[in-house]
Image (cartoon, rainbow, N blue to C red; front, side, top):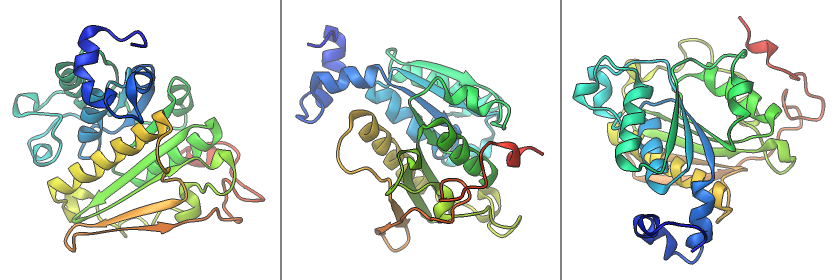
Length: 265
């Protein structure tokens, strides 16, 4: 069956039985390369479900180490991992789940000097970061590198999710079409300041993994051009349409951003 081993046929049996996936789709997953940015609240469930699904190569970017306060939501790490780099404990967790996966750890923080080289080796980028500097950097870099970006965010009891591939042109917006500039410093609290319900990070990270798998397999309706908003307290999930902004500084009709120099400090 499309080159799958007997063990792989058994491991991925629930994928293979799906008419939309089958052995051909599973082979496609095993050949895919996905870069996960952030090994925290979003990145943990994202990483684990991508590994379980058989994504063949997963790059994991994070410069942080595991702390006790992470464990309420960052389920790729355990108590014995406290003090270890998150990319190392994430690598070990992925290996325990699925030895088919080649996880490449990058213990670093993304910056304008390294991001383009990192993106070059991957098909799809999944942003599970927790800060606006990284979100805007990834959006701009993915547009310039012509890479699909699946992005999620979570704070308190709320989450957002979308896919960005503005490099394909209309009707696909980029992140800046919705959020033109980062908010003023201090306007939106961080997770450490505002808090986050641990399970909300799990919900949004798992939904993010679903969108990555859909993009790899070419299944269903892409989230490009749509923004999913999850209100955990109300138990409400809604999706709003978003269009490209003709005045967008990155992908608009007369863009002012042509490289990553604006991100250099």
